[in-house]
Image (cartoon, rainbow, N blue to C red; front, side, top):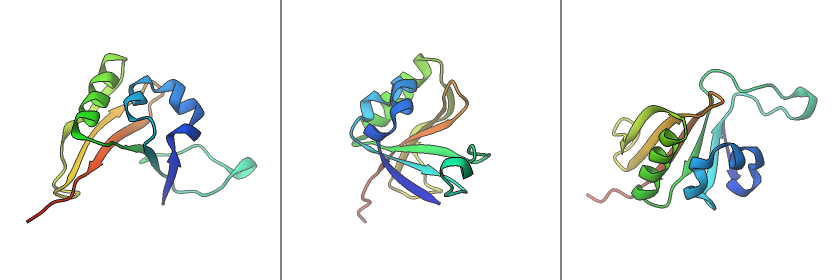
Length: 111
């Protein structure tokens, strides 16, 4: 399941992930196996990650560098992910709370 959130609505994420500031105003997508809310809500489990849509490759690169400089763990350096799509430029990190976080640019591939 995919859900889209505006970064401005991700209060705790915005304050706990200073490396995401270069992506402010972008959309965040998180993958969840449950759509429960309130008392029915459960913590995300294995496979959960949140992805920020980046405006440029440079923004993806800055996200990755900033994450590593603030204690994040590299889970995939910036680059094309051909196994996803030829225009899928992304970087992955694990934040200080153990969440997997991605910055991604979906480029149009011509040819």
